[in-house]
Image (cartoon, rainbow, N blue to C red; front, side):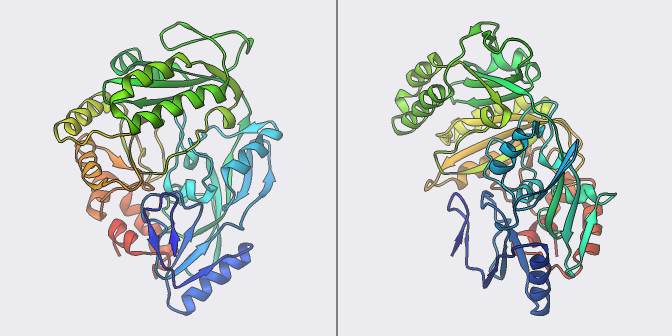
Length: 422
């Protein structure tokens, strides 16, 4: 039995292949083709959607790891490499990725294929850093793609082939100072919080308060207190203490909801800042396993979207028990990336594992879909091919590339059949 990270997706593959190298990937695809079977790659199991689910052949890429080559401005890595291993390795060499996702347990191939992102008005996702890939197509042929088809491969959903190596743009590592502060959501939006800092994130509570988190490169003395979002000096504190205080408040407020306002006020007293490489200060642990439905809405629609979502969930007694996570990102060129062609705000609604999340997520899809939202492919959604066609002008181009790289739909699945068509 295969399960994803949250336990919400399960399957019983007929067979599982775990290749040790690129030749092993080719062999696995050819073997599946000779038997008339479909095959789906799987990375770190962090998708909440059924992208990796299959009852035929599962291709476990966990052994396809490591850095292949370093250049001045790019790194080539195997697709099964996890960010938690890659980011420290880049740091040791004085380099970093411009995009640092909130969770670093994902694989490079999975993050690129699903559009996994970090947060920052001028920062794209992992997909935006891709400068070339090697993949095995549906006929078992190894291809190098770095030309016109690259924007199809960026956020390819595992429908075009099996990524084996990925070239990512890198830059010099910058030390970041990160801080957090509890503020009123409306004030943060009015003050242009997301445009004020290089990295930003909000955790929005039902009472209109938000835990604002931000980070900027250290340009001056790192021991000098950073100015908070309202211009107040924020003392440099222990990241562990801040995380423990805020995390404990969140956890206890879920158990005793009536204590939430007081607990958030208590947590805000711990608000401070910490300094270090981006991969240390921007990555958040995930102590609570939850289901997630995240939507990419036009950046300019964020305030309206959050107000509509709060009103709709309150009216139907479906207020999320976990704070709504809000991030932002730059426009993307990947044809099926949720941020394709527009500055984007990401709104993630979370529900604890074991709760009946379907009514809440259905409402979220309705409200955020009405403001031209697009679902993050790795999270819970109910979109089908007509929705994709209506939202993505390059969907026909993506299908043409798919027809060339996988005409027999070797990498298809029931989920992809519904999402992209047969």
